[in-house]
Length: 162
Image 1 (cartoon, helix red, strand yellow):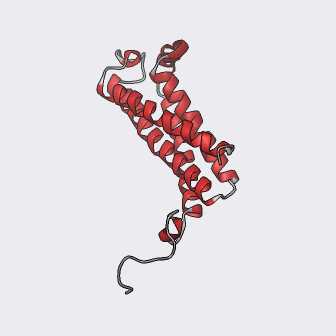
Image 2 (cartoon, rainbow, N blue to C red):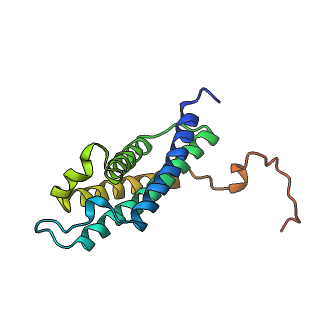
Image 3 (cartoon, helix red, strand yellow):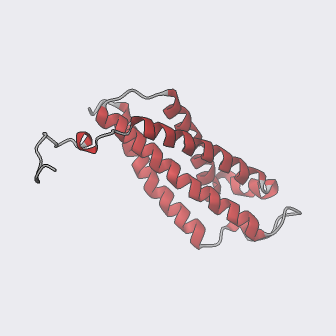
């Protein structure tokens, strides 16, 4: 079990989720240095900031769906499908671009000042497709009987049979 790559990936994603929640909270509550002034001719500051907040709100469900899919695959010892891989790639790419932009690593935030609406709209599309693929794959692997999903269930019932 400890040699399974999926377990370590699950641990890494869970830790990354904590840092992402902090970065999104800081972004939503505080002023973002890259977005303090309006852009050239692309509209007002508020519209662009709302797009970036929408991207942040697409990142969170994508990471949660990735963690849920990975946990179910690990617990039930199921193989991954191409839908899992493709959805995870879309979510992770969108997450990384958003996170690099939010922390302004290597001047990416400064560069995105000149791009305007293109990057947040592209990230919304990428994250939307990734979220949808991961949701479809979650429905595919989610157990029909939740009692069989519990690792400590041995077939006993605690109440009267109905």
